[in-house]
Image 1 (spheres, rainbow, N blue to C red):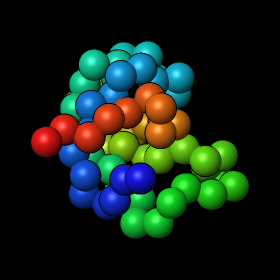
Image 2 (cartoon, helix red, strand yellow):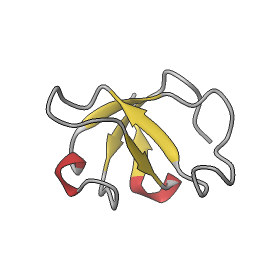
Image 3 (cartoon, rainbow, N blue to C red):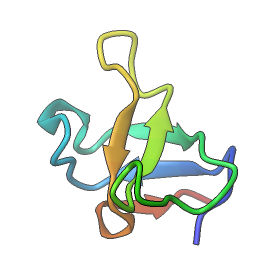
Amino acid sequence: MFNAGDIVEIIVCEDDPRAGGKIGRVLDEVPPGLLTQGRWTVDRISIWIAPVLVHAHEIRKVE
């Protein structure tokens, strides 16, 4: 489970392959629902990459 503000590493990203291997921050304050098809929103990846939607198995928390 992730929380808003968690720093995560994007392992792989179906939404934008350029985001794979990058670090970002989770935006969602509640668990994802039907609108995002169960995907988390991750932002602050890069100035060249817009926020992406990722499944929980595509990201991991960075300590």
